[in-house]
Image 1 (tube, rainbow, N blue to C red):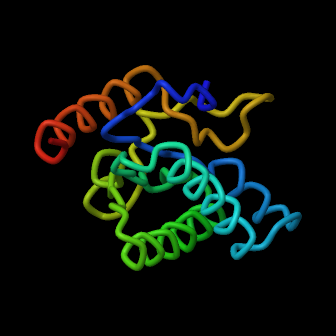
Image 2 (cartoon, rainbow, N blue to C red):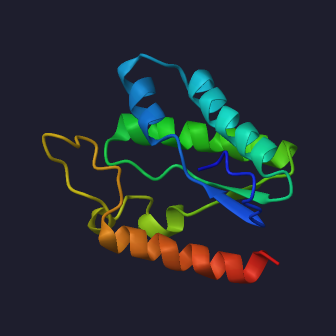
Length: 142
């Protein structure tokens, strides 16, 4: 519960915006409003945890090209925002993409009738991200 004022984390890691990519793709939202939605969450976290270092994790790569382009555009804007607001933008695409930029699908839940875009990490993907975050925290959080 973020309203619990007894929480005093030294670091907060935020990965959000996955559903915003689909909203932009289907036209119910534009990239600017998707970015603004994420920034609202960031500002809320800064208000609730003023002494915590906030780390923004990039949106994960998509399987479909139109959605990949949207995710890249939102990531670009978030990285710019982070640079202008003393926040750290964490690049994790190297964990889930091949060197040629194509996504490594073995880390994602396959498409089903319920999850069309397979943009959610599977157990192996979550483990991979978790190990990276643990390494990152060991190197950067004091």
